[in-house]
Amino acid sequence: MKITSYEVDKLNDPTGIITGDRYEFLLGIEVPEDDELYEDEYSLDLRVILAVSETEERVLQYHIINRTSGKVLDFALEDEEEAIILSFCKEHYKEVI
Image (cartoon, rainbow, N blue to C red; front, top):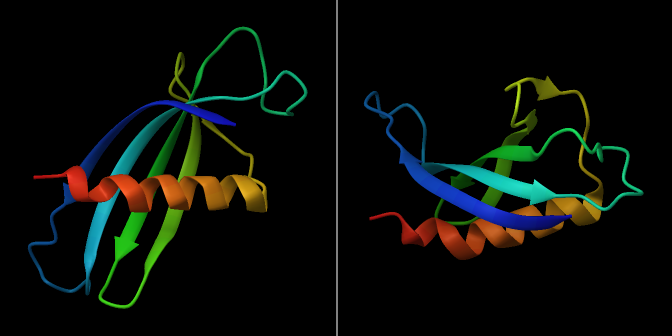
């Protein structure tokens, strides 16, 4: 999997119920032709919610989305792909002003 583009926003919790901060990423991704997600007809996005607290940074959830239709695909990332996504998000969430 290759990340080709990204957007990141900090999510606002006006209630203060959630401890720590949450960031939403929209990642444009490419997958190799031998990946089960690969199809010629469409591009993929990955919507990721990153939780950041004083002690950890972790992915709370993610959804793989068909960019053309907006449909959420029922697939899970492999462990090494999840590690790539977490590393990328940890590196870029601080860009939010």
